[in-house]
Picture 1 (cartoon, rainbow, N blue to C red):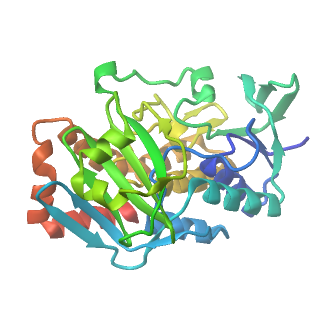
Picture 2 (picture 1 turned 45 degrees about the vertical axis):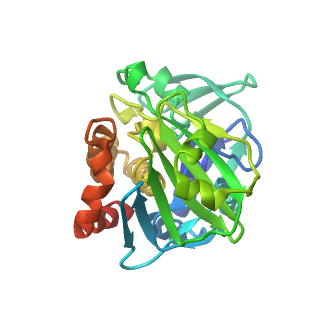
Length: 346
């Protein structure tokens, strides 16, 4: 099978890379062992910028309108409604299916296998697959997740975070009519609970914090949220992800580029992972078209700057003695809170 670019990883960012490649007229193959819509523990809120990026590539997943973000703790509340356009709460499986259908419609090919080996020279990259076959292409984009095997094969893993400081995520869905069109972020003593409307009768609750982490325990410690969800049926099993902080020493090695979580990730705390990932997909394909890994490294740094700086600062504050003051401070400075939300959402 001839391909100008191979995308390793068939999640949302990998599929976005494939779609971007086909829009640019490149022959593309996606290598992914899993079949069908792929689920993941995430907040499922698409910020306005992420939704606009999807619309640009012809993807419009069904979901629930999101008008903004609210931060809430036991005594304070602050909210900001998006200034220009809404976002959308979308089940991860619904998003994945919409992207997969668009990629197939555009002629992206798929191989159901794992990448078990990688070698490259000045002209291209050769991948060894779990079915014993090999696949060669001039370029590879690896979008194979937080714990990217390709990143490890390239020896691009950064220094691991100490175990006592690692943060994880867990998510469940509850059958209840959403009570707001905002993403609510409830701050408790040791964790944050993201509540996202994803359908007319369904909300997702993702909790972020250090282990041990239990969705029900976090909810029970937030009386307002516990009351909202009392008696609601749980419709999905808990799904976890982490450690959330992942570092990459570089975003490229030879003719292999890293995109999405594989390229490095800070935390889910600011909810803009998809927006950043879709921007990386576009930049990676542009770099392939231009034949410039240096161009991609520069674009990656520009695209992720706000995410890295603001999210890192918030995570530091969340793990410090200043944690109880985060929401009250934001409530006293709603214009500052709003400007940060706007900056991260676009």
